[in-house]
Length: 465
Ligand code: MYA
Image 1 (cartoon, rainbow, N blue to C red):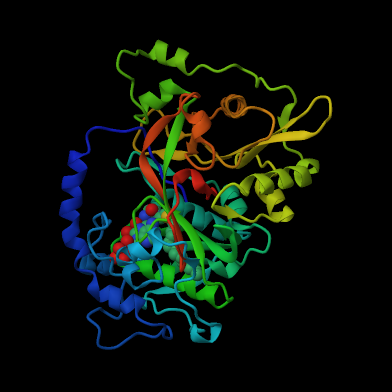
Image 2: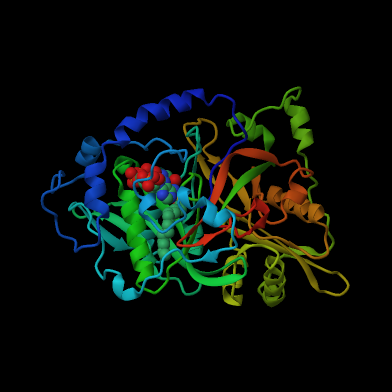
């Protein structure tokens, strides 16, 4: 997952007040928490709990409060996360002062319930077949209307249908890990979603089969009702049943306990639009025409031999990437098939380019970015922000600044408004010189059921979608 992060805004006071007010409602959720995340049992209504047997989204919200719970800055207990095998605040010494790098708990498949977790009786579990256009449409609509927004609720991610298929169908994907919650009756509307895809992850040189978790989403009508912990527990159960015990995920929120805290940086490509929609501000002593000039880019890329990635580049580029990633502490072990899946260009989803030496025809560099537009909420003139997100880049010959300058030019050619990059890997080398501005949000990296020393942002060598 990625976090929306516009350039810093001064006026955060109003937000804080709002958050304080909301905390009250989030304290009344105990009933649903008990219903939802007690140890696994068959999907039958439970007796003796203070919740109606027929829970609908309306009465669930009325009883237990709706709207997002207040943000927990780490000082309050986490009713759910404090019960999970993740590093807890009290474990600080264990992870910061030693070279420990191991699972937190060990279990066997027989210990994992074969039946799904209980849901309120009005809801039921499903596995989402993203090849079914009707299901794909339902997932797209849920996310497009309810997924991640920036702090000021001005922008909301709008992952396209084709993007979702790409993100969720890597080689060996498991459909059962694309978990949905639907209402049991009527149109069987989709209210909750979470996904896992299989990955092999290196943490400080130790390779482990994991699941990469993404797209956790609860419909706005059911917020604050403790459905998220149930979704997480159910996907964990389904993953554990296949003998996988670790996960990697990212989030904008701080939970126990980030393995790394990264930042987003933004490079304006269409500064006038970005300022008009409130994504960025005019800098002091700047006007629109000076700003436009500041961010102007050449029309064509400058590196001789730069061209679109083709399937034939696969083996060489894959080796180049695998070799490059050895520098970092948290990386994905891509197979060639996976590499081809993630890097073969798909219009409006993923763009990849290589530099082919005009004389030797050797491929020396790779750059890639994915397409993730955002809905601009409530703007009359513009409804879409088109953002490119830096994916994986490798430079063995073209200097970093030149390579990524070309990335900006190529993104501009493709009509993106902004080019975003995290301060992962060696990105620090080019961010400042290429006029990226720092965003106002952090992106936390997490590992589930793994204990190790936290990482510097530049030690992170993995980018999640
Ligand atoms: S990150 C993207 C998350 N999605 C969004 O931000 C979309 C918009 N928001 C929503 O849809 C809802 O607000 C969500 C929470 C669904 C986020 N990751 O049901 P609740 C904890 C993990 O009452 P709601 C992504 O996709 C929160 O701290 N936990 O809350 C990666 C609290 O627990 P505790 C989160 O607002 C996901 C509890 O949920 C997150 O209605 C990785 C409250 O539940 C979050 N982003 O719904 C998931 N936000 O009381 C973990 C809140 O303890 C995977 N919470 O503080 C773990 C590995 C699983 C597999 C393991 C296999 C081995």
